[in-house]
Image 1: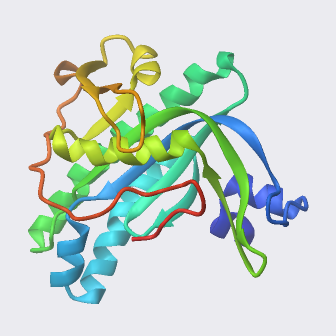
Image 2: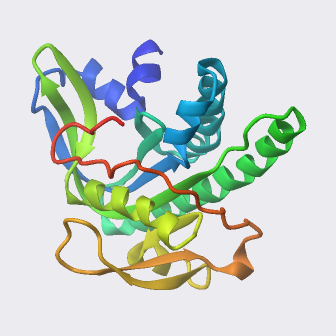
Length: 238
């Protein structure tokens, strides 16, 4: 329905059930997904608006599409980024949520390869993006001002996943995930070491897809001046 199209499945249901006040929300466990278009600042500056719109929507089809298909909840399109969650209520449900998120991740890159073949045939700019996955407790609910609310997730887990995705450029990887997600699929991920995330006191070990489990090529990482997305309040749009 229209509400779910604009807000997402779970957020739409909560709004229809009366969760319409600022602060309405609950804590939940989730695998959090953040994907971000590469070189978006330069592309927006050099492409015609219609062409850039086409690029954005094609990128969303490759990222948000698989996330929804595999049971995720897309909460926001933050400029050229996609924020989604795969909620779970107990530790027993975590493996299923994690596997859904990583299956969506792999499908996203397969779709990108297919779409880029067609884009390159017609002389259009290929799509490049990175994906970060993290898991933990998030606050899921209404944030904003009385006149304009949005249903989203906030908390350290969301802050961290933004910085994890940013690190995909530095380590030249398509995707990075945290240890708990990697350990759920033994052999499918390998460590890229401990890394410091901006604003996080302790280093965190990150993992990328193991070469033997994927044929995905690593992006040639370009410089992008995008800033990490802060989520101590509403997501900052860039």
